[in-house]
Length: 165
Image 1 (cartoon, rainbow, N blue to C red):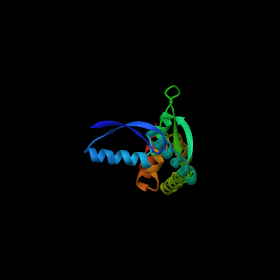
Image 2 (cartoon, one colour):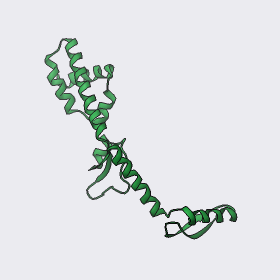
Image 3 (cartoon, rainbow, N blue to C red):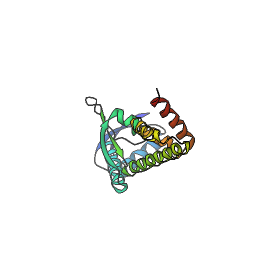
Image 4 (spheres, rainbow, N blue to C red):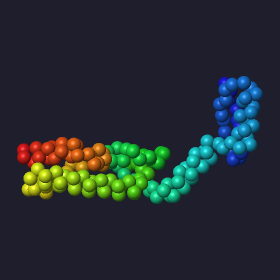
């Protein structure tokens, strides 16, 4: 193991740690000098590529509370180093198309609830059930409920029990 000061192809100089035979170390140093990027230039290149990909796919940056991110957007990527400890916010890369799909799934679930309530002959519960569902929603919940009649029946039972307390 040895540390070397290497001048990268980007023009910056940085200290790197190399392992292995001297010949392998020299080969790696030569590669870094010819076509390697220092850590800051490499990070900048990756950030630029990611921004271009997000722009192409229509993904937008959205600042939100860390709690909201964990509850509703945990499957989304975050901007590195964007967490603000003072305000407890973070920048999240959100795909607006997924949010639209989520709303469509929610509408399908409510429609399925309507059909189930109608089949059960308890139309008077429909308004209360839908209000209860909307009051107790979170995105994870709606993802799990998507097109699943068994879970929908369980949901209706939960709603009924809550409303008849």
